[in-house]
Length: 156
Image (cartoon, rainbow, N blue to C red; front, side, top):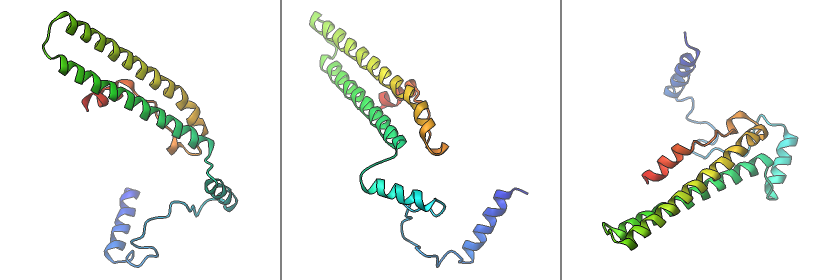
C-alpha cells in the first residue's frame, strides 16, 4: 500500500467530516514570517536584520543575479524590437542605402546577442557559489540555458 495514498485518504476523509472547518486563522493569509520549528534566537536575529533593512548574503547574491538576468532580457528585447521596427521600415527596398542599413541592423543584432550570451555566462558562473551559500537546497538555482532564453525572448 502506498503511504502517500493512505495519507491523502485520511486528509480527504477529515475534510469531508468538516474537521478543518474551524481551524484558527481560517480564511486568513498564512504568515510565512514565523517558523515554528526555528531556533528562537536565530528568529530574533533574522527579524532584527530584516527590520533594519539587511538580508542574508545569499539572498543579496540571488537578488543581484535575478536583477542582472532581468536587465539582460530587457536589453535584448529592446534591441529585438528596434531591429523589427528598422526592418519593417526598410520594407522590400533594395537600394544601396537600404542594404547598408540592413547590414548595420544585422551587426547591431549580433552585438546584442553576444552581449546577452556574455551576461548569461557571467550569471551562470556565479550560480555555483550562490548554491553553496543557500541554507537549503530548495533555494538553489539551476544554470540558465542560453538557447532556451533566446527562444523565449524571440517568440515574444
